[in-house]
Image (cartoon, rainbow, N blue to C red; front, side, top):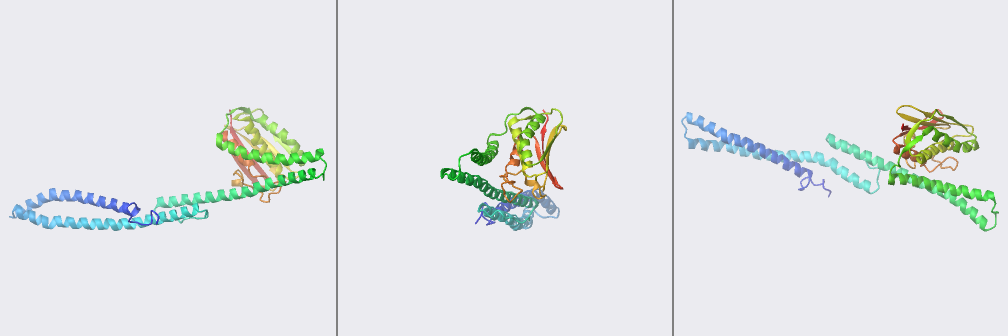
Length: 361
């Protein structure tokens, strides 16, 4: 039996409420009895003396009536306190027992467990918080399972290709020419990028944010665009930029370059051939906003709140051309928030806009 299962165990809610109620009743009766015995007995004796009764007979009558009535009242108060405590304990203990049973089911892996909201306001608030926690755990478990499937797929494809190339080279089926080595390098590079992304997330959690310095944000964006321009041209995309004069922010140059690179790579990956990717820097006050827009299918409204979560993937098909491991935008969020900035995403009518802000230096 759990600790809320027996209302009259010494450490149960019911027993504690009953003890508290009895103590309050006894204290109240003691104060009342003291007043009645000290003051009431003197008044009673004086009144009886005026009518010719002796002090001894007055005391006897007082004890026979008032004191016995007080004892009876005390007994009734104690019984009432126990009954009320039992009723209150039952009302409190029922939702607590439900929470205990629900917590045990969650610990056993049944993350869809929820508890009804009932009882006092505080208990209802606790039940609501419990359900929110259970929902968050269920969501994280879904993300974890999906990530395992995604990561297995992402790892299996390049490893299978590497294995196939190496077997063919070993057996003399293909010649070790430049094209073959480029294909091997491409597959190995995919594995390295996946490992680097996971390491970035783990390192950010372990060691905290890096030291920040003054960085020209416009120059950092211009450099990131220059690096990604060949990939945009290869994908037949129009890559445009709208950049003002120099804007200085506080950031880590390497982390900022990685965040910009991830945003641009993500935009190019999800933009169909002939589409457009636009990069804009808006020098507002007190922050500076960087936005990357791309044309394409857009992000479903149900997915928008989750795009910055670790391992979350909007594209469930996991095709190599478009599906990533679900960590690119998570890294952007980790990096930008470490600099004191914010991230966000919007998508409507075939246009997706992902942005972040950084405080000015």
